[in-house]
Length: 375
Image (cartoon, rainbow, N blue to C red; front, side, top):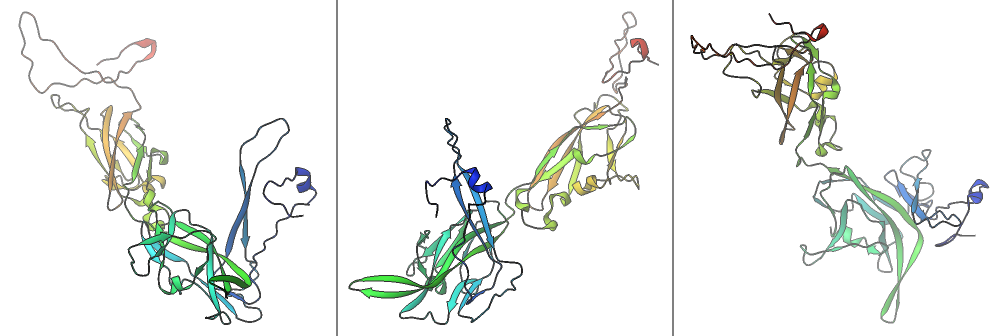
């Protein structure tokens, strides 16, 4: 018994192995396929519980793949049907016109005028649109529809076009089936009859990413040891870039160059000598590092040498070669201190009243019993 729309089955049917799925569109013995083929199928269903109104719709997905034991191209009896299916490459947001060398089907017995090779789309692409150009006006296009038969002439004439939607996606696919049809004229109406079994497949498009988004730089406040060298944790910084999807390791955000500068927000110019915040350096050579990457941080090749300023701020700058991003980072000394610095300008003393003494307390050091120690 075949199940159709609104048919019902139970969990018991599944447990008793009474529910089966049969793939009806199998490539016949006279088929040659020049690509590994995968067909996606599935069905939507609802779970019915007595006394409950469950409206959630679930989807069960089925993937039909060629057997790994079959050697491609698959020819068993006679090379009567040949499906050409080569992965196409299209620029992000761009277009590609289909050619017989990347998407086509041929059959020696399927020849005009009585026979012709046709195809229809079973599933449309998710991240783009398939269109047909007008043969007389190439600037005018029409969207292709599912389950509508198109002659392979539209491929011969470069009228079938894929337009990517510009999204950050590494690939896209659509499902198709080729079939040889015989045309029979009845009065003024032409009817088509399929000859043989339709040939089903999945066509893949690789999307070549375009660098049109800046990298995203995320940082955390950095806590360092007072007047000491502190290794930088790998969790301190992350870099994300939408344009690196499918672009390979040479475009990994971990390799993007990072530079840094000190923001003198917490350094007073009216006091001297005022301590410095510090610098990034290589933990092996102890040399100052002005440029590094996130990969250096992950590998433990970066440390920070603190030079006395209890609290400071730096600005990190990252680039992907075209776009730039920056982020401000607070750097705090882990040890609390009591700091007194002398002003640059002299204090005018009144012999009778005396001179007020101004000093800045950034952090204070509390010994036992909450007493201050000031020398």
